[in-house]
Image (tube, rainbow, N blue to C red; front, side):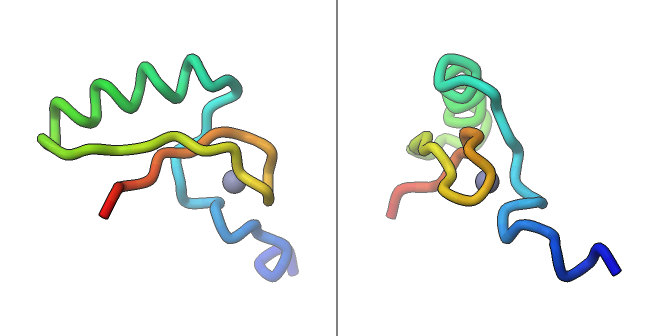
Length: 53
Ligand SMILES: [Zn+2]
């Protein structure tokens, strides 16, 4: 019954620090030739990547 307790971001990559997220962002931007942003998640308190529209 843990399914309902999963955070909405549980499938996202998570980073402990902004620095780690930014490093991953740079790599992902090069790989995907896209602009990404980092943000601190209100759900888990960790950092995730998100695409810019
Ligand atoms: Zn999160």
